[in-house]
Image (cartoon, rainbow, N blue to C red; front, side, top):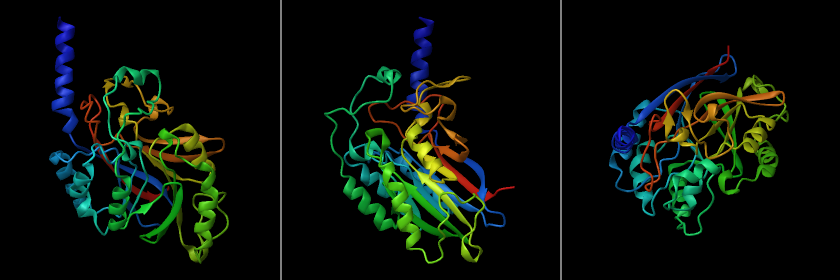
Length: 315
């Protein structure tokens, strides 16, 4: 009986309190070439937005006061067929701030009720009764904000004297990623850059382009599957940003996440770490995200978060 009462108390805390205990995680990432001006990156992920979630919308709006130099959105923005209403309310203060984004599965498909214990059997599978969401309208809004689509694409932005070269993939959780397109996408990006060099992806992380211009290569994905992270590192990424895991969503204090909903190691299910593959490595930031499915509105020992990464010169 005592165990049952403790379980009910934990569920009540996770659904009524922690689920809306909005948290900003701040971290410095020593990834820029020496002498570079720092860059503030606001990493947003997994909002799973519904139109009535005013508290979440207001908190995200308040993050504009951080004056980020760049927004990186790693997907799963929508959590309801009218979720775009909430996304517009949350993101409008960031109009004029450069941004990049990739899709998550819940930008394509709406939530459905599932047995949560199925997650212990491996990554979740597509449910045929999932309702299609208006991802085209979401993309149109992001384009209106001036954000760049990295779904199986590459793009570049110049910030604070550093050229940031991005490549990304569409949602790997649904198998929409096209890792085979990365090399060609970056080659095309470099071909359009009059100051670009041809050393990618073998340039050292402190490399500078012609004229002394510092460069940074960033990989962006929704779901941090090993195949994606390995490919990103092989393609020269120095920093990788991802979401999807919800940090486990329900964690055990002192133990951590019970599931990851992909094949990333549990110890790297959230926060900043280093991903190594072969002789290469990259900083990896996995966001625990800001939302939950409206069919499973509980978080425990894993508060909803956004991340402010300050990119600084390496020692």
